[in-house]
Structures are given as C-alpha cells and as structure tokens.
Image 1 (cartoon, helix red, strand yellow):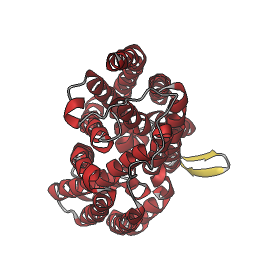
Image 2 (cartoon, rainbow, N blue to C red):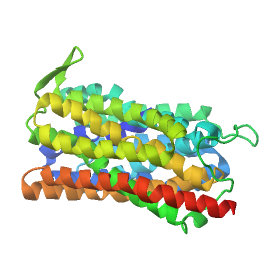
Image 3 (cartoon, one colour):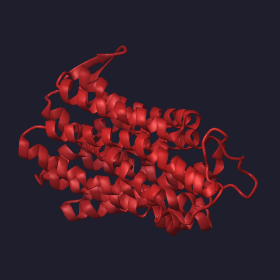
Length: 396
C-alpha cells in the first residue's frame, strides 16, 4: 500500500513541470488524474471477484507489474493520449493492490474491522510522505521523467516482492465479530447489495466527501502557487521547508494517521457517529483554508486538518459496508462502494475549469465544504436510522 501511494498523492508534483514542457494546460493534464482514479476504483469489483475466488497473491502481483509499467510510460509520454493510457494502466495496478489489501484486512479482523482497515489504508494515505521530498528533488535535479521512471520501477518491484507474504484467512482462522458495532450475520452477494438503499446512501455520501479530498489531492500544488505561498519558507516544530513541500508532507502524515485512528474510534463509538464528527470537521477545515490559506503557515496547518478529516473515508466506508453486508464477499462489495471515488474524481477537471473561469478557488472551496457538511448530516440523520431499521427487519 505504501508503494502505490505516490500514484495518487505524488501526482500533484508532476502537473506543473509537464505543463511547462508541453503546454497542454492544467485541465487537460488533470484528466489523466481522473482516468487514474476511474480505473483504480471502477475495476476493483472485478478484481475483488478474482480475489474472493483465487486469493490475494496473484492479483497483487499483477498490480505491481502494472504500477511499474504505468509510471514508466509516464516518463516517455510525449502526447496527452500516452499520458492518459499510462494513467489507466497505473490505475488498474493500484486498484489491484488497494482493493485486495483492504478486503483482506476486513476478513482477517472482523472484531476490529475499522482499526485493521485503517492501518492498512494508512499505508496508502501516508506512504507518500516518505518520498515527497526525494521525488521533488529528482524532478528539480534530473527532470520529472527520471522521477517517473525510477520511482515507478522501484515501487512496482517492491509490490511484487511484498505480495508473496499475503494470504486470506481459512475457515475458522479469523476471530468472531465485534460486540460493540452491529454487524450482519448474513453474507450479501454483490447483486443483493446493489438492490439495497443502504448501499446507495453510502455511495452518495462517499461521492460527497471524496470529491473535495480528490480536488485538494490533485490541485494542492496549483492552489499553493495561486495563493503565492508555494515557495515561502515555513518553520514549524523546528523544521523549515517551503510551504508547499511542508504541506504535502504534513498532509500525507495526517491523511495516514486518521485512517486507523478514525477506524478505532468507530469500533467503539459506532460508524455513523464517527462519520458525523469527522465530516463536520472536514467542512470547517475547508472553509478555514479558503479564508486563511493565503498565509503560508496557515496553509500548511489547515491543509493538514483538511487531509486528516477526509482520509478516514478509506477506513470508515469499507468497514461500514462489510458490517452491513457481511464478510464473505467483502472485497467485491467494498470494491463496488469504492467506485464512488471514481465518480467523485470526475469533478477534479471541473474544479480546474471553475477556478479558471472565476480567477480564484473560493467557489471550489465553498462547494466542497457544503458537500462535506451534507454528508455529515446524512450520516446522523438518515444513515443511522435507516441502518437500524434494516437490522430490525433482518432480525424480525
């Protein structure tokens, strides 16, 4: 999971140098990011089908090969279509790794599903924190092409080696379910969950929250440049770095930490209650970043808050989905829900167009804050009572 993190969270470092070399425009280049997210997410249910039947190892090995191939193609892309094709290849590879690892964690640890899923997803959320500075240094010293090639090959190779340790639990190996969180005693097939209002409510909520998070993931470097803070030195906790580098590193750390933390909290306080609190924090954080983000220090700090509050979707949503619909088809079912992230990614180029049309990012920030606030209300006012009613029907 650490080795696929840069495919999403390191992308923002490459947009500006690619545009400087070819002049394709930010919006056209960001289409590649959308294609990556779409192929990473929308194919996970199919990859999950193979995992649920043939085990995790082969699927993740294939993902490692595709991860290496995708970034290697990026290093030689001289047209937008090559860039888009490479994004699709990398997205398929990342999806093979991400969906398999999260699904495996949910099967192994049903008694601490939120925490286990969060720790697994933390690798994806925080993994790029260790390589943001090295990638940035290679881009400036050797060119973005070298960064794509070297890191792509290295990341893919490590995925292929690490996957040899993966195994799914055999019958009786995993512990019993949680006593604190209501969990379904039935295992719903993918076709059954597609007929459930609970699934579609979760889907809409994930789109609402993921949209803003993906916009900031893809556009943070551009926002920092437009705010004129990207290269301003910021000192915090005894460390001094340019604001953008500092923000990218801190964001990845907070984005990673929140996944096991929020999962652990939800194991004790309930999924919906945790969703309400963390989504509300996200809405406030986005508003605050729009208001005070032009100050370099506040840009760094508030960016960390925003990424802390949106990173938890990686633990709360798959855990909630498996609680509701059972563990037998967990990889496929969580993969179906994960396609909502792909749907949300289609708003990333639209955010670029809106910022270009208005000349600033204010409307983008306000729309993202409103969408996240709506998700918070839905979690406590609609999802929780609907889930309670569904459980009562099942036990009747």
